[in-house]
Length: 515
Image 1 (tube, rainbow, N blue to C red):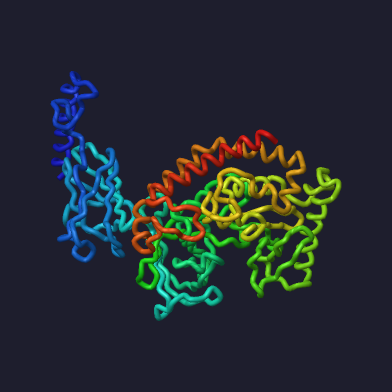
Image 2 (tube, helix red, strand yellow; image 1 turned 60 degrees about the vertical axis):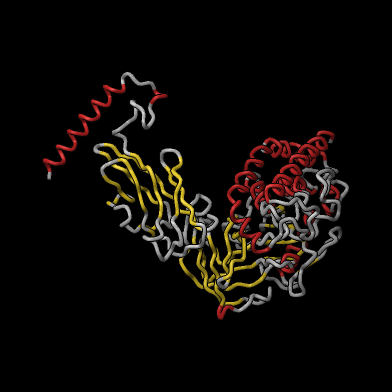
């Protein structure tokens, strides 16, 4: 055996020397397969596919793959596959092939394609690696939820016990799988809960990490029924991610299978809550929400200048207890300083109690998006760490932002919205605040092309998913409240979002330049 290995090595060396002599007269642009100057020694993967005859339980027809460049093979199975242990058909130029470093045979070796598989082609001394990615259905990770007895999730107030499984995709948008687990699930949202496609909240028995994000018990599934682009929440969170805000919720696009039924394109992500990796206000801090839709069981208070109640989301408090009085008095004191005659004083005015940077960043993302709910109406979060200052954020609820609403004039890309509401109407009377807004807007304006590229990238990523979602819900070419207009195809919806955002950026730049 040792003699055979030495013989093969010598043969490969001779082949390499002969090839090198022949190549001396070849130009780089002639190094193509089928020409006199091709590289006969170079190992190459020439074809990958999956035959239904070799995979009768998973496939109903043969699946071809595309070899991309010189190191990747992309494959797509057009239906849901829960078992991605498949037998591939591999064609190659070389002596042998390996799968993740182990010997394999075409049409015989079964491999786990729930994650990328490295196929190595070996020809003598030479080897070439290819990454084979098998996407199923639309390519998005798939969330499987099964309630006990397949009971309907009919309420927001009551959890149902359920099983949970996350079948991660093989792309960089989510390359993990969560093991089967038990979970509780209920409805969530306000106006979104009244829509045909429902949003949900998940609660695990222990901290669980999903799609690479920090572990926690609480997660949400956003339906985005009113947003035909499925991009508005993602776009706002992207802008939050490039801002200086302390924390912006992290989300991933997924498909939801509920009780065996396909429910469409969702965003799986973090619930806004206090935690080390979420709203980090320490063990005794506060999470508040200016919330016109606060329910009867929630603890709220009013201030002198806010029209809507302030909902104490965390910690659990009772009216009149020490925590309640602390945060109520702090917010009122901060507001009193904001409306005092000396409110611009850096040491004794509003900046003593309110964090300027967070108030500016939160304002700009919501103003750029012209987010109608951000007019201190609902989903306006504020945090407070004891010994610190009030901070705006995190960002939340943008499905009817970016021109996707038919009231309050917020469909228009022109006009200032939040500038005239509540605390911000007073903040804009402070030259220091205005200067900071102008400075930070220039930063976001400088990132406009990055934001547009993000829209393009995610629209391409979602192209197959939105088709399936539309097959389920039929929203394209139809009016979906509170849409301002109907743009038709998915491509038209996305392009309109980009046109609106570009016009919005340009109008705001001209307006801030005047200040």
